Image (cartoon, rainbow, N blue to C red):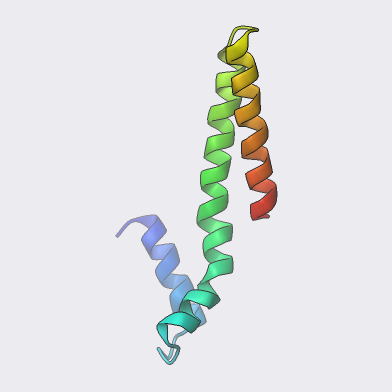
Length: 81
């Protein structure tokens, strides 16, 4: 079992240890955890990639494009927080 699956399984057990929630209520209860643990990590990884591209780009259209990707990634991190 991967570490991510194990972390998610632990959260499921903490939210619905008695298995009494229906799938909709369980999904709703897990959304804050999923947003915090998985979506934010993806946004951070994208931010790092965009920052690296910005540092490596020459001062041209590629630089502007890389900076726009960086700003977009920062916006998504802000939205996920």
